[in-house]
Image 1: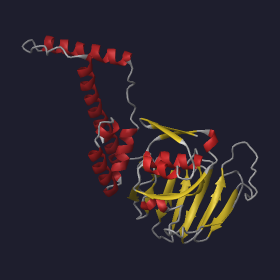
Image 2 (image 1 turned 60 degrees about the vertical axis):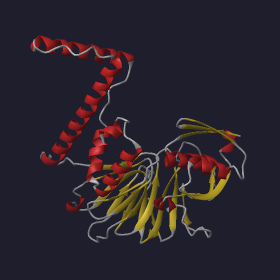
Image 3 (image 1 turned 180 degrees about the horizontal axis):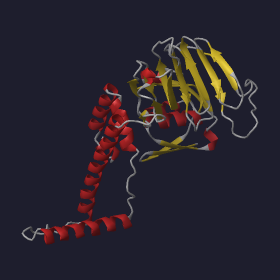
Image 4 (image 1 turned 180 degrees about the vertical axis):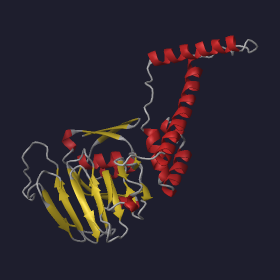
Length: 342
């Protein structure tokens, strides 16, 4: 985990870590603490101060231990490597101490020891909550919950991003999902929630069972969904809604399977399918950013173009080549950034 946070982990180590995280959801809390630990700024001034501080300590070692020889003078680059390694060690020790305190220290009556599961762009993962509920997280998502939810009156989680839930049935303890724009109440069902704060819409897609969606827009409005329905909530952005099929800022749609592959576009990502269903290019670009962990700069002239397609295990360049079949555009890749122009 230290190598992942410091950016030194190999692809093999990242895959191994992801497998461990899927087997033990508690590890994600430790990784979350470690990832949010403040790192020192890597500036020239900081490097100079670090070098000087290490030199002073080496001199003190000679004064305190006269028999010791002063180590061979170390270059600034080597010093920074040593300090970086020590920083990782300190981060690991610090996160472990925080974890021990969270599990050993008595909590105040009004305190909650919250846990979090998150995925970065380009990563999808599966986890099981303490009540038995299974959750699949899409890239760039974060799920927060109380590890002691089995001893509470209800089960509640907070979602930022996209997740598919297979909720463990418990008639006496409802399951609640809180997002920035809506809340969802269920007893036991499977459904998908898409609630990225930077998107123009939030969605809840019901596969089985029944859910009740509460809109967090200042009005008391509850919407009940039936299987194979989804609700699309338009985010308020200070402008008047102009789409004629929107009623009071949201709409309810019936799902349809793609006849070619029998996939539901809203939930296909859970099975590692990247699906575009007559989506605008600007929405596709955002989806590919989360899918491949890249940053896309899209020309304004291309944003309104629509595409339909299904991809499984294709690389980003292969997806672009497929899109070029129907629309001509130019692409330039510079590191982690992609520039697409007409």
